[in-house]
Image (cartoon, rainbow, N blue to C red; front, side):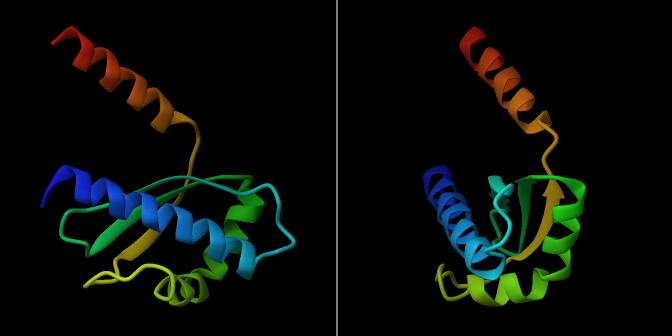
Amino acid sequence: MSKNKLEQVNQAYKKALAQVLVKEMPQIVELTVSDVLIDPSYQHGRVYLRTSPEIFEQVEKKRSDILTQLTKYVETRYTPKLTFHLDDGQLDHLDQLFEKIETKQ
């Protein structure tokens, strides 16, 4: 599996999740899908959401509905089991560290 293909799948899920969340929870405006990381086997994935803990709990309660709707937007061989995580900004920090490492090599 090429890295570019996996990145494309991650982006497709990120866009689709944003659409599904707007559709499933239209009253919530303080919700951002900051990143989606699907493993290379397409069996599991992590979704990082930037929002308040209260809204995050509402998203968790609707998780099965969200995952069901998601299959209509992204067509892959396997539909990964996604887990939602509250993004506390650490992901941005890790990206910056990896960029520093890559530029030094």
